[in-house]
Image 1 (cartoon, one colour):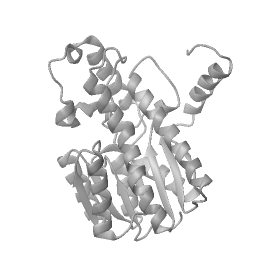
Image 2 (spheres, helix red, strand yellow; image 1 turned 90 degrees about the vertical axis):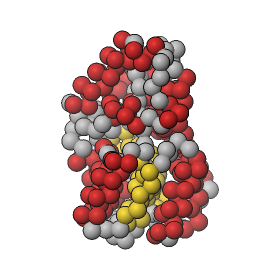
Image 3 (cartoon, one colour; image 1 turned 60 degrees about the vertical axis):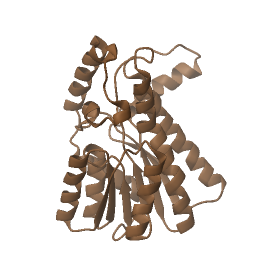
Length: 279
């Protein structure tokens, strides 16, 4: 896609961070923008910034882990602008620890926010894009963590890997059916100066921190410290919007903010090819 003016962009998790950066870049290119977030203050901030740019914007404050809210987001876009040209499933969260220590609600929360909500997005928005028949783009925001493994934040790695694979499979499914008007993209950023380490501030009621001992554990507390330290070393958020729209312009499928992440993927693939244990 080369021309963005007056086309329609939808972004989930756009109240801050990468989602906000993508929404603002689209607005600067003259797009009409639909933004979602679970955080009303963040969503209002993004809306105000887009209004200052001077393009139309509508918002949805809703928990995107619920399918009915994703369907409602599509309806909001169609009711206001009549179509969707670019959809970005960006909403994501993290919590540290191995699966045997994580509370079940956190396993569900991370799975639904990072992967299931993105799949809901493809389910609803790709149908609309196929019906439209015009030039469209769909992006899932995964992570560099979807290209490698580690001992920490196991659910984050697992769900972000699933994002990458689901995007790859969907690309092949579209291609096999001769559907050529939709380009698929998966963004795999490494450390960017976002607020992902503050995910707990945006928990829905059903995943609220409770009296489970995990939330007072050394693993939980130290994991939060590690995440904050990592984010603080990240690249400026302002560059990510440009990276994403360059990918749309050049039809790049895999979109990286840190090319060095490929070496981690290479090491993992070599272990698989050699039937070696992870390491």
